[in-house]
Length: 240
Image 1 (cartoon, rainbow, N blue to C red):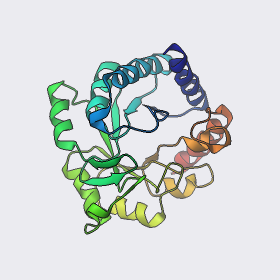
Image 2 (tube, rainbow, N blue to C red):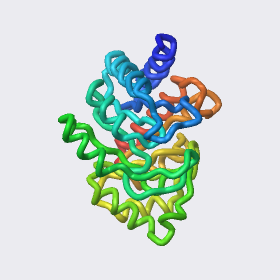
Image 3 (cartoon, one colour):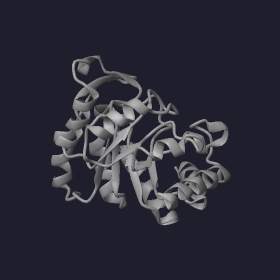
């Protein structure tokens, strides 16, 4: 466990030194991912311990994503660690993912959040989430699916591509932003090269792969990549 936490801290330090605004701790290396009912308490405990260490090390605003699609364990970990938000890939409706059929757990999660007095933990929810088929909801538009997130009390909407590292299309991003009054961020496929175009259309980005060695998500974070990315982000924000 110490070695794993140190690996997380090494990446967190590289992100912090590169100037990011915040961090997300997630069990992205825990593949193949389990469905929520099969995720053990050890995962929640480990994420809690790691997140506390990351916050203590960097002082950055930090969120949690427990894969696959586990908002209740993520809320527990956020409440115990001091994380400010959770990311939930399927907050409302249902779809067929790599892990099998996944249901949105917004109703249970919101009641659980109130039960543990964690109303301060924000919900970042994906719209038309990556890594899955949406045949179950194929008769409903992306606009409708996005509005469902707002109706189910999400705080931020995330637009993504089809899989990790894939950029969302301009058409889909425009569709998502046009369907909600909530802040929209892009959650995959963001690079220094496409940052200008994407930030013109949304409130922020969640970026991982392009800041790692070889732009491969399982490699270590490279501070030089982070610094170059954030330099450009600051230029764009200062010019807005």
